Amino acid sequence: MRTIVRRIQQLEEKAANYQLAAPNWCEVLRERRRRRAEAEGVPYKEPEPDPTLYANGRRPTWAEVLRHARAKRIAAGQSRSAEATTAG
Image 1 (cartoon, rainbow, N blue to C red):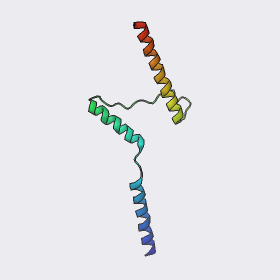
Image 2: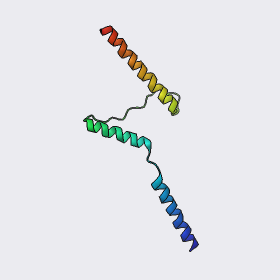
Image 3: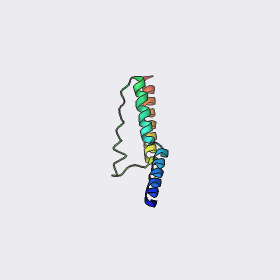
Image 4: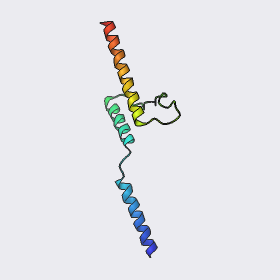
C-alpha cells in the first residue's frame, strides 16, 4: 500500500510541476509575431538565422546576437541616411 501511495504522490507532484511550468518564451514570441502579421494581412515568414553568427560552429550567445542585431540596425540606418543626403 505504501508503494501505491508513494507513486500517486510522485505522479501528483509531477503533474503539478508540469502545470506550473512557464510556457516557452520563444514560442510565445513567435506566436505573437505570427498573429500580428496575420492581423495585418502579411504572410508570416520565420527569419532565417544569420550564417555569420554560426560561422564558428557553435550557437551564438545572447550578447553576440544582440550585438550583431544592433550593428546591423546601425548599418542600415547609416545607409539610409547616406541615400537621403545624396538624393537631397
